[in-house]
Amino acid sequence: MFNAQAETMPTGELRKLQGQRLRAVVERAYDHVPFYRAKMQAQGVTPDDIRSIEDLPRLPFITKTDFRDQYPFGMFGVPQKEIVRIHASSGTTGKPTVSGYTQADIDNWAECAARSLACGGATAEDTVQVAYGYGLFTGGLGMHYGAEKLGAAALPMSAGNTEKQIMLMKDFNVTVLCCTPSYALQIAEVAAAMGIDLMTLPLKSGHFGAEPWTEAMRQHIEQVLPLKALDIYGLSEVAGPGVANECLEQNGLHVFEDHFYPEIIDPVTDTPLPDGEKGELVFTCLTKEGVPLIRYRTRDITLLLNEGPCPCGRTSRKIARLMGRTDDMLIIRGVNVFPSQVEDVLVRIEGVHPQYLIIVDRQGNLDTIEIQVEVTEGLFSDEVRKLEALRDQIHHQIKTMLNVSAKITLVEPKTIERSLGKAKRVQDRRTLS
Figure (cartoon, rainbow, N blue to C red):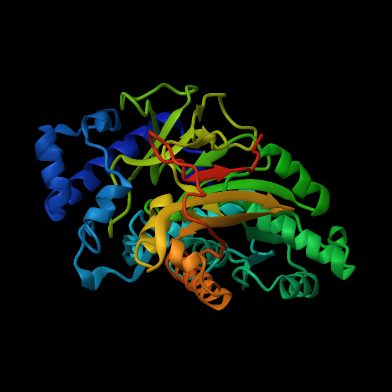
């Protein structure tokens, strides 16, 4: 363990600490974030009403929409001069959800990411290849800082350039791999084509997240890579990677509860559910300064496991593998994509009808996305050169706005099926079991 004192804290002691930290974050949010103050006043609650972690259900929820409405800095709980890092994730209208970090936030995040790596047995002796994207996305920098906090050697590869990834993995004796699960399989496929046997490498653990994956995919990864494939959970609004991680038991993800308090609620009634019942995952950040986060609805569906102490010795509760989402967000190669984002791009392009179909599939081990777009009658019958220019324009705009490359197929007017109810914009042909 990276921090045995925190990770093996007795439950009673942990709940007391959580209560103290909750009171502090509620006071900070109420005093310094007008949005929170208004939400609490509307619900008839003040910081004085929060005495322990059991009082958490008295507080209002917040959502990604709240972040979007407060764009860019309305959720910040400290003066701008105390913010040392800004990250952002995509929103439903092209505006990102913005999260600011103080130095204390960065230090806590690095600590939790280090704990995640330690869950897989990583130590200061290891070399950690970080093949998550770097930039506004939190994946790359989160695991990078975690590796350095652990004392391990961080190899900041980012995503892509697979042949070089494999070359350095081999030459540098990489022992820990961090990337999406589909990219881990892509690495194995490319290595096989290069004639490189990755099973001879000293890899021992992989921390895979940022997209849905299954137990079957875990087994496949462990057949082609010499490592334990571990599930990792995080999201930009909460902290990034390092919120929860599987240990080597591979039976649920330990939540680092001294920093992140999990709840499961009924997504219809909004009422808290007991451990063991499936519902929507809600997080409260107990130590975050830059953007206080109280009862954030993740839209992820899972449950809190109630199986007693874990053989690894950690005492925090665990969440089960994610079972889906309550909204219509798609995750394509680790990137969040909303149908409304696609529509927002298309309606701005001349010659395009507001009728489209998103087809998500999986070829080999990588997700693919095709967007079928109806064009106007006159344009469809026009010369091929103009159609190709339009297709290239749409491809470029989608890539720019959504950060994902899609195949664009132009179709005749009235080709895409209409619906009397909600438009069916998505066909997800991937199978997750």
